[in-house]
Image 1 (tube, rainbow, N blue to C red):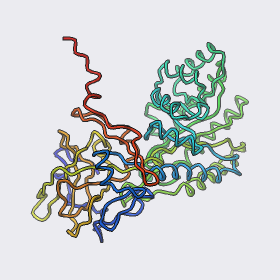
Image 2: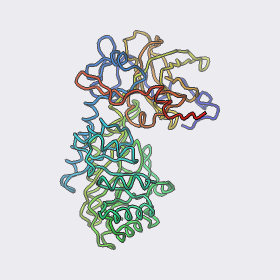
Image 3: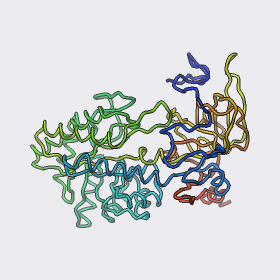
Image 4: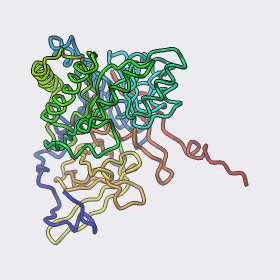
Amino acid sequence: MHAHEAGALHAPGYSAAPEWLPWPADVNALEPGLWARTVRKDDEGVLTVADVPVTAIAAEFGTAAYVVDETDFRARARDFREAYDAAFAEVCGGADVYYAGKAFLCTAVARWMAEEGLHLDVCSGGELETALRGGMPAARIGLHGNNKSMAELERAVEVGVGRIVVDSHTEIDRVSAIARERGVEVGVMVRVTAGVEAHTHEFIATAHEDQKFGFSLSTGEAFAACERIVARPGLRLLGLHSHIGSQIFETSGFELSARRVLGLHARVRDELGLALPEIDLGGGFGIAYTTAHDPMTPADLAAQMAEIVARECRGLGVEPPRVSIEPGRAIAGPSTFTLYEVGTVKRVQVDRAASRLYVAVDGGMSDNIRTALYGADYSCTLANRRSDAHPAVSRVVGRHCESGDVIVRDEYLPADVRPGDLIAVPGTGAYCRAMASQYNHTPRPPVVAVRDGRARLVVRRETVEDLLALDVDEA
């Protein structure tokens, strides 16, 4: 839905509750599929995670806070690793799962991924150092990005990352120069723009090549990049990499992308005499933010993608390369909820027949920019008590000086929600803390991991001292 320049309330056909939002049979109940696997509500209506009540988490760590179900996070990582290994075992000997660190990364998460047998995809020097400090072996790290600095490339070669995904001819030359200087061979993959954009069950065959990432397949630039790598000393061409989008709920886009990228794979074999050992089909697997979303399971995704790769390779007469994928949101997103405290509640008359509760909490666009930036939808629940009040159409908003500071645009909350209540918003593990800011000089929230009845900090809350630490006053 396109926004009206005067605001959402002026958009045609506006109603207080969107059509996709069902009337709740029990406004206190948790919607299945939106929450991490150890999250429950007790008899008093208090939300718990791994048997730890959120009231205790709020008392110890404060609000706003990101709360991670560590058991869920690890289990989702294992689900992907085991599902793709099994599905691709007979196709190409298995598959490698690279957790996409851009979704959310800290040293604890890097350690969890290392312990669960995953690889890790990073796209900056900071993410690389976080991965290394968290104990991820360098050989299981891939470095991504469309404009890596010389310092980032030099560091990646120095520590021996398993692969660098190159994104320009200039970068190919830079990595080659670093490799020659150090007397090493560096494994690289070519980021291919396959002309496929998967978005809300549609894909566009050519238009999506107008973007900053990768080498165009249709213009021949991707093949030229492969030729350049083969001709440059110090480089070992591992394979091709593609990524078609985010929040993907079906595999049709992957099918077209795989067909095109494997076509290039066959051309490299035929014209350059090189059998590339790998192919990366990217990530972007969708999750359920609201009841309107219906994501596929890792097992179903893996089975369909394995069938696609096997079929396309048979058609091209090529030996299937080893496949890798890069889930980030699908692992981190559902494992986490953000816990807020209500500060104020206002009832706003939308029209003559409808009103809406505006529930203001002690966070906002500084800890979740996705609603304002992408128009993302979220759900929420009253987390500290059970209510017998009737459901009321509500909007959870933040504390920042912006009218667009909205966290949850549409949800039913009990009509008696009041200051001091706790609100929990699920599905905030990906791209919330990672994209958090200090807007309005607001310290970023902590990340609290909960497992086996114990809550602990994995990222501490920022303080005002942290905010001021970079100021330089030489007056």
